[in-house]
Length: 240
Image (tube, rainbow, N blue to C red):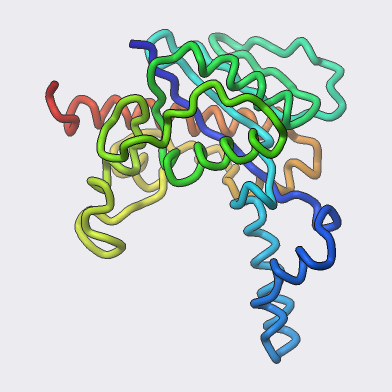
């Protein structure tokens, strides 16, 4: 059974893309604060969160890898796409895309060939984000079954769901959730953040035109997810 591991990186859409009514809605909480400094701080916080919501953010990179062959592909936004043919580095192909619609189209053309998908927090973030962005951009979604029955690992194994036992103990119990970096360090896996880049840097890197570097970071997330999946499968997965 062909398994695909994938991860996405997102960034905020420009504020000027939203009209006055939309901006009032988005920043309403901040505008109700009487203190000007607190209001400005809260506006900045909300603006940073734009990258987390598919109606205010965009997909700037998708990295993916075949769990068996280890062949991978990284799709990333590159407006000035002189190297449009992409670059092959070992088993991983880096492919620049001129816009988000092309990036998502390329992803769904790959995804349709896989029986199942493996993610870290894909049910809570990656999958709904790319579903909604695809719908907004009129990109055909080739796999619409990744948010089906929650309590199963086919066709979607979300490792965060598995390692928290479907959030059995909430925020503070024995099975509380941690981020990928923390799980990797706990299980002796090289953290994808060990190269000095984190998700907080993506917005700035988009502005600086560092799409390829974003792709490399995203691919490290995928490789770490695969290593964590192999540990989960060997030590914790239910025997079938």
